[in-house]
Length: 249
Image 1 (cartoon, rainbow, N blue to C red):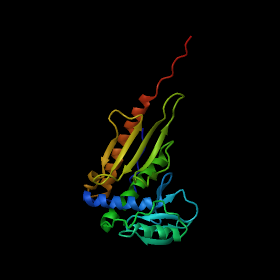
Image 2 (cartoon, helix red, strand yellow; image 1 turned 180 degrees about the vertical axis):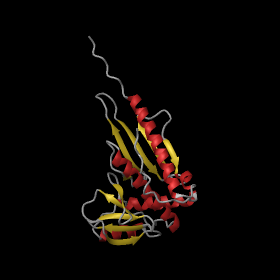
Image 3 (cartoon, one colour; image 1 turned 90 degrees about the vertical axis):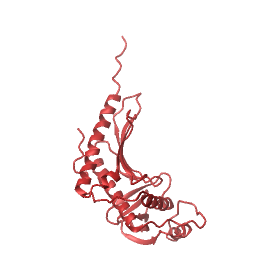
Image 4 (tube, one colour; image 1 turned 120 degrees about the vertical axis):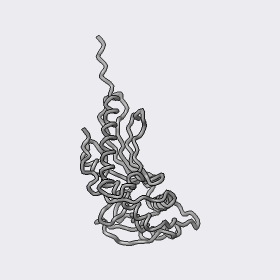
Protein backbone atom coordinates (compact mmCIF):
# COMPACT_ATOMS: atom_id res chain seq x y z
CA UNK A 1 0.00 0.00 0.00
CA UNK A 2 1.29 3.45 -0.91
CA UNK A 3 1.10 6.01 1.91
CA UNK A 4 0.96 9.54 0.52
CA UNK A 5 -1.63 11.02 2.89
CA UNK A 6 -0.83 14.57 3.88
CA UNK A 7 1.41 15.38 0.94
CA UNK A 8 -1.01 18.14 -0.04
CA UNK A 9 -1.24 19.73 3.44
CA UNK A 10 0.97 22.68 2.45
CA UNK A 11 -0.62 23.15 -0.96
CA UNK A 12 -1.31 26.77 -1.90
CA UNK A 13 -4.02 27.34 -4.48
CA UNK A 14 -2.73 27.91 -8.02
CA UNK A 15 -4.57 29.72 -10.77
CA UNK A 16 -5.26 28.83 -14.39
CA UNK A 17 -2.67 30.50 -16.65
CA UNK A 18 -2.74 31.44 -20.31
CA UNK A 19 -0.46 28.93 -22.09
CA UNK A 20 1.59 31.59 -23.88
CA UNK A 21 2.13 33.59 -20.66
CA UNK A 22 3.03 30.46 -18.70
CA UNK A 23 5.54 29.45 -21.37
CA UNK A 24 7.16 32.90 -21.29
CA UNK A 25 7.53 32.74 -17.51
CA UNK A 26 9.02 29.23 -17.60
CA UNK A 27 11.43 30.26 -20.37
CA UNK A 28 12.55 33.31 -18.40
CA UNK A 29 13.21 31.20 -15.29
CA UNK A 30 15.11 28.64 -17.37
CA UNK A 31 17.36 31.34 -18.81
CA UNK A 32 17.94 32.74 -15.33
CA UNK A 33 18.72 29.30 -13.90
CA UNK A 34 21.27 28.60 -16.60
CA UNK A 35 23.22 31.71 -15.59
CA UNK A 36 24.03 30.10 -12.25
CA UNK A 37 23.66 26.30 -12.53
CA UNK A 38 25.12 23.84 -15.01
CA UNK A 39 25.91 20.15 -15.43
CA UNK A 40 26.08 18.26 -12.15
CA UNK A 41 24.21 20.97 -10.27
CA UNK A 42 20.61 21.20 -9.13
CA UNK A 43 18.20 23.65 -7.50
CA UNK A 44 16.48 23.18 -4.15
CA UNK A 45 13.51 25.15 -2.86
CA UNK A 46 14.07 27.02 0.42
CA UNK A 47 11.01 28.28 2.29
CA UNK A 48 12.58 31.09 4.31
CA UNK A 49 14.09 33.10 1.42
CA UNK A 50 11.38 31.83 -1.01
CA UNK A 51 14.07 30.91 -3.52
CA UNK A 52 15.59 28.11 -5.56
CA UNK A 53 19.15 27.69 -4.27
CA UNK A 54 21.96 26.31 -6.42
CA UNK A 55 23.58 23.10 -5.13
CA UNK A 56 26.21 21.96 -4.51
CA UNK A 57 27.87 25.24 -3.59
CA UNK A 58 30.40 25.98 -0.89
CA UNK A 59 30.03 29.30 0.91
CA UNK A 60 27.64 32.03 -0.32
CA UNK A 61 25.36 30.59 -3.01
CA UNK A 62 23.37 32.07 -5.86
CA UNK A 63 19.62 31.53 -5.82
CA UNK A 64 16.55 32.62 -7.77
CA UNK A 65 13.45 34.25 -6.42
CA UNK A 66 10.80 33.26 -8.92
CA UNK A 67 7.99 35.72 -8.14
CA UNK A 68 10.12 38.77 -8.89
CA UNK A 69 12.54 36.94 -11.20
CA UNK A 70 15.39 38.12 -9.00
CA UNK A 71 18.94 36.80 -8.72
CA UNK A 72 20.02 36.67 -5.09
CA UNK A 73 23.04 35.57 -3.08
CA UNK A 74 22.43 33.68 0.18
CA UNK A 75 24.91 33.25 3.01
CA UNK A 76 25.62 29.97 4.81
CA UNK A 77 22.53 30.49 6.97
CA UNK A 78 20.24 30.99 3.95
CA UNK A 79 19.97 34.70 4.71
CA UNK A 80 19.74 37.24 1.90
CA UNK A 81 22.98 39.07 1.12
CA UNK A 82 22.60 40.67 -2.34
CA UNK A 83 19.88 40.99 -4.99
CA UNK A 84 19.66 41.81 -8.70
CA UNK A 85 16.38 42.02 -10.70
CA UNK A 86 16.70 39.92 -13.86
CA UNK A 87 13.54 40.65 -15.87
CA UNK A 88 14.72 42.62 -18.91
CA UNK A 89 18.34 42.69 -17.69
CA UNK A 90 21.29 41.97 -19.96
CA UNK A 91 22.75 38.53 -19.37
CA UNK A 92 26.22 40.02 -19.60
CA UNK A 93 25.38 42.41 -16.76
CA UNK A 94 24.09 39.52 -14.64
CA UNK A 95 27.31 37.61 -15.30
CA UNK A 96 29.39 40.64 -14.27
CA UNK A 97 27.30 41.09 -11.13
CA UNK A 98 27.87 37.47 -10.11
CA UNK A 99 31.59 37.73 -10.80
CA UNK A 100 31.81 40.93 -8.73
CA UNK A 101 30.56 38.92 -5.75
CA UNK A 102 33.00 36.05 -6.26
CA UNK A 103 30.59 33.69 -8.04
CA UNK A 104 31.57 32.35 -11.43
CA UNK A 105 28.62 32.54 -13.86
CA UNK A 106 27.85 29.26 -15.60
CA UNK A 107 26.30 30.40 -18.87
CA UNK A 108 28.67 32.08 -21.36
CA UNK A 109 27.99 35.70 -22.24
CA UNK A 110 25.46 35.90 -25.05
CA UNK A 111 26.03 39.30 -26.59
CA UNK A 112 23.29 41.76 -25.69
CA UNK A 113 20.70 39.06 -24.99
CA UNK A 114 18.31 39.94 -22.17
CA UNK A 115 16.37 37.79 -19.76
CA UNK A 116 12.63 37.97 -20.64
CA UNK A 117 10.36 39.97 -18.33
CA UNK A 118 7.09 38.04 -17.87
CA UNK A 119 4.06 39.40 -16.07
CA UNK A 120 4.48 39.51 -12.31
CA UNK A 121 1.21 37.69 -11.61
CA UNK A 122 2.27 34.79 -13.86
CA UNK A 123 5.67 34.57 -12.14
CA UNK A 124 3.91 34.55 -8.75
CA UNK A 125 1.71 31.68 -9.96
CA UNK A 126 4.80 29.82 -11.18
CA UNK A 127 6.48 30.33 -7.80
CA UNK A 128 3.46 28.91 -5.95
CA UNK A 129 3.47 25.95 -8.32
CA UNK A 130 7.15 25.13 -7.85
CA UNK A 131 6.88 25.59 -4.08
CA UNK A 132 3.85 23.27 -4.03
CA UNK A 133 5.70 20.67 -6.09
CA UNK A 134 8.68 20.70 -3.72
CA UNK A 135 6.45 20.35 -0.65
CA UNK A 136 4.37 17.52 -2.14
CA UNK A 137 7.37 15.57 -3.40
CA UNK A 138 9.38 16.17 -0.23
CA UNK A 139 6.58 14.66 1.84
CA UNK A 140 6.53 11.61 -0.44
CA UNK A 141 10.31 11.32 -0.17
CA UNK A 142 10.14 11.47 3.64
CA UNK A 143 7.47 8.76 3.86
CA UNK A 144 8.84 6.40 1.20
CA UNK A 145 11.64 3.92 1.73
CA UNK A 146 14.64 4.36 -0.61
CA UNK A 147 13.38 7.70 -2.01
CA UNK A 148 16.04 10.23 -2.98
CA UNK A 149 16.07 13.95 -2.19
CA UNK A 150 13.86 16.31 -4.18
CA UNK A 151 15.82 18.38 -6.67
CA UNK A 152 15.03 20.68 -9.59
CA UNK A 153 17.00 20.28 -12.81
CA UNK A 154 18.25 23.74 -13.95
CA UNK A 155 18.12 22.66 -17.61
CA UNK A 156 14.46 21.55 -17.65
CA UNK A 157 13.07 22.76 -14.28
CA UNK A 158 11.74 19.23 -13.74
CA UNK A 159 11.38 18.64 -10.00
CA UNK A 160 11.63 14.98 -8.99
CA UNK A 161 12.29 12.34 -6.38
CA UNK A 162 13.43 8.86 -7.40
CA UNK A 163 12.47 5.72 -5.46
CA UNK A 164 14.93 2.85 -6.04
CA UNK A 165 13.61 -0.66 -5.50
CA UNK A 166 15.64 -3.75 -4.59
CA UNK A 167 17.35 -5.54 -7.46
CA UNK A 168 18.82 -9.01 -7.71
CA UNK A 169 22.14 -9.78 -9.36
CA UNK A 170 21.82 -9.74 -13.14
CA UNK A 171 18.68 -7.62 -13.17
CA UNK A 172 18.41 -4.02 -14.33
CA UNK A 173 17.79 -1.35 -11.70
CA UNK A 174 14.11 -0.83 -10.93
CA UNK A 175 12.95 2.61 -9.87
CA UNK A 176 9.99 4.98 -9.79
CA UNK A 177 10.30 8.68 -10.57
CA UNK A 178 7.66 11.01 -9.15
CA UNK A 179 7.88 14.58 -10.32
CA UNK A 180 6.57 17.81 -11.77
CA UNK A 181 7.45 19.16 -15.21
CA UNK A 182 6.52 22.83 -15.88
CA UNK A 183 6.65 22.41 -19.67
CA UNK A 184 3.42 22.62 -21.66
CA UNK A 185 0.30 24.66 -21.03
CA UNK A 186 0.79 24.78 -17.25
CA UNK A 187 2.96 21.80 -16.44
CA UNK A 188 2.09 18.33 -15.19
CA UNK A 189 2.71 15.92 -12.36
CA UNK A 190 3.97 12.53 -13.52
CA UNK A 191 4.89 9.06 -12.28
CA UNK A 192 7.20 6.90 -14.40
CA UNK A 193 8.86 3.52 -13.91
CA UNK A 194 12.01 1.79 -15.08
CA UNK A 195 11.52 -0.66 -16.70
CA UNK A 196 8.79 1.36 -18.34
CA UNK A 197 5.18 0.35 -17.80
CA UNK A 198 3.27 -0.69 -20.96
CA UNK A 199 0.97 2.32 -20.61
CA UNK A 200 3.94 4.69 -20.18
CA UNK A 201 3.90 7.56 -17.69
CA UNK A 202 0.91 8.47 -15.54
CA UNK A 203 0.27 12.19 -16.03
CA UNK A 204 -1.93 14.84 -14.41
CA UNK A 205 -2.13 18.27 -16.07
CA UNK A 206 -1.79 21.15 -13.63
CA UNK A 207 -4.21 23.12 -15.82
CA UNK A 208 -6.80 20.50 -14.86
CA UNK A 209 -5.93 20.93 -11.19
CA UNK A 210 -6.01 24.74 -11.45
CA UNK A 211 -9.53 24.59 -12.89
CA UNK A 212 -10.66 23.76 -9.33
CA UNK A 213 -11.16 27.06 -7.51
CA UNK A 214 -10.62 25.67 -4.00
CA UNK A 215 -7.09 24.95 -2.77
CA UNK A 216 -8.17 21.97 -0.63
CA UNK A 217 -9.87 20.40 -3.63
CA UNK A 218 -6.72 20.94 -5.70
CA UNK A 219 -4.67 19.17 -3.01
CA UNK A 220 -7.07 16.21 -2.93
CA UNK A 221 -6.89 15.87 -6.72
CA UNK A 222 -3.08 15.75 -6.48
CA UNK A 223 -3.11 13.22 -3.62
CA UNK A 224 -5.62 10.96 -5.38
CA UNK A 225 -3.58 10.99 -8.59
CA UNK A 226 -0.32 10.21 -6.80
CA UNK A 227 -1.79 7.44 -4.65
CA UNK A 228 -3.31 5.67 -7.66
CA UNK A 229 -0.31 6.21 -9.96
CA UNK A 230 2.31 5.16 -7.43
CA UNK A 231 0.35 2.04 -6.50
CA UNK A 232 0.21 1.16 -10.20
CA UNK A 233 3.95 1.77 -10.54
CA UNK A 234 4.76 -0.57 -7.63
CA UNK A 235 2.44 -3.23 -9.09
CA UNK A 236 4.17 -2.99 -12.46
CA UNK A 237 7.65 -3.28 -10.99
CA UNK A 238 6.68 -6.19 -8.74
CA UNK A 239 5.74 -8.10 -11.91
CA UNK A 240 9.12 -7.16 -13.40
CA UNK A 241 10.91 -8.93 -10.54
CA UNK A 242 12.10 -12.18 -12.11
CA UNK A 243 11.79 -15.34 -10.00
CA UNK A 244 15.03 -16.99 -9.08
CA UNK A 245 16.09 -19.76 -11.43
CA UNK A 246 16.22 -23.11 -9.72
CA UNK A 247 19.75 -24.56 -9.73
CA UNK A 248 20.35 -27.35 -12.19
CA UNK A 249 20.86 -30.81 -10.75
